[in-house]
Length: 200
Image (cartoon, rainbow, N blue to C red; front, top):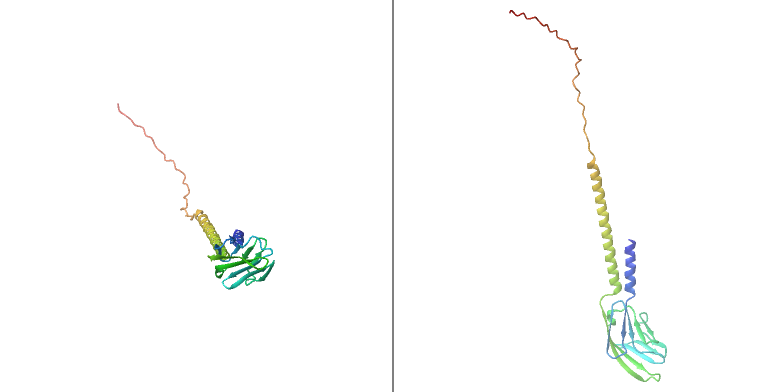
């Protein structure tokens, strides 16, 4: 059972640590991620001292103004790392798929770059997959343990049965012999020898 718990923790740890990285510094970049995972979108080289707008449709996901996040529509699921210009989106959902528009402004507020990137979220959550895989492993381990116990008990019963059949029972009955007759004294028969006379 300890092995099952260890396997479950290992699978959960692996499933939580999965992430996708995408270099979106070129216009029209195609990025992908898996449902429930984290995606790192590299938007620019360095965001220090500049302004950035990141939109999905008409929704402003990020407004970065000289080292301060001004607007954030998905506060609990994203983080922006200005040192390397990376936008991190956690716990991907299907509705995160789509086209993103990035506008970069210089320090004077003049638009210097307009780019688009496309993000597609695929599959099922790795957490869900990890939980399902772990559950299947635990169930399989449970059945293996049941089979081992069943086989062990069957052997024990067979051994007990063999031990019982190895015993040999003998039914002993006593039969009375007819009473012995006392030995009769042997009577010696007397033999008489006669004389034969021959004429001659």
